[in-house]
Image (cartoon, rainbow, N blue to C red; front, side):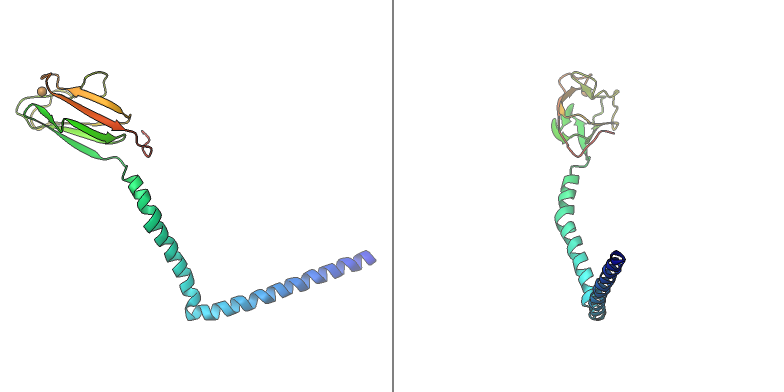
Length: 163
Ligand SMILES: [Cu+2]
């Protein structure tokens, strides 16, 4: 019997404390919402939201963008006067290069070793494009004119994952 009384007392205490807690909570929300309706509470979430978004937009997103500025780009190399222009080019993994033959005569874009670059004979105004996935130094030439030489240096790009 005593135990039951104790349990009942404990329950009552919990209920009372709970009631007090609810009672304490209600005035706060009641106080907050009226003054909040006046504008302070409405502004507070807006301000914090703006600050958060501003912080992330002004701080993180540009950094992410500058990190994303590492996103794949396309570079152009002209083939004219029997030369690659520019002759050397530095890019990042994931970038693409487009060679366009502006000469009347045909040229190719052919790796000096390996098979990274291997165009067909490019007639005038024809182009050849290639995406570089792997960092490294790629030297190439024209199969028809061995004096035509070029180099593509591909730097690592941590943000790029070959698909
Ligand atoms: Cu050539």
